[in-house]
Length: 196
Figure 1 (cartoon, rainbow, N blue to C red):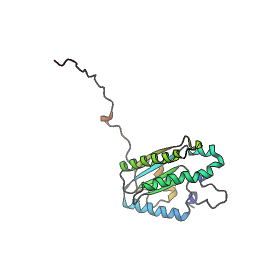
Figure 2: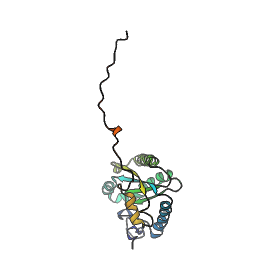
Figure 3: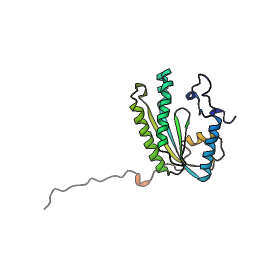
Figure 4: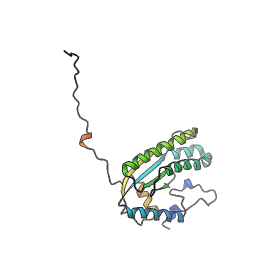
């Protein structure tokens, strides 16, 4: 029952997995992901977590109506193919809700995760725009990468674990204002033209 939001509805006639508020993974796939995540969390006390959010997808779905049914698998295939190319051993990714992808970088630093997420987002956008579909105008990708403490995630079911990983408040490193980034008053420099 705890996995109810994630049950696979794809076998129900007329069901649109995108309408599912959470994930369309069947219980076996959920267990497999939970095992992989728990293995990673037990090995590392901190893990770099990335989130790619497909901005504008709701609007595109509404605008396209029934036409979205044919385009939806293609959009998700592009996203997942690109993410897969950047995955290293120990990395895990999954789709959360209809417009978010969670990526756990098993061995990457937050800086490496940030760079990978940026490259993924740019490549996905270039492929989507190359489709040259009027309906896809307004599509963008927002990324968020943070370092997450894994102790609180160990042993949690997927439906509790994923929202926590997707949250932008779970990062251990908050952006801080450093004094050396504060704006300084710059005095004008006078350049002389008299060389004698």
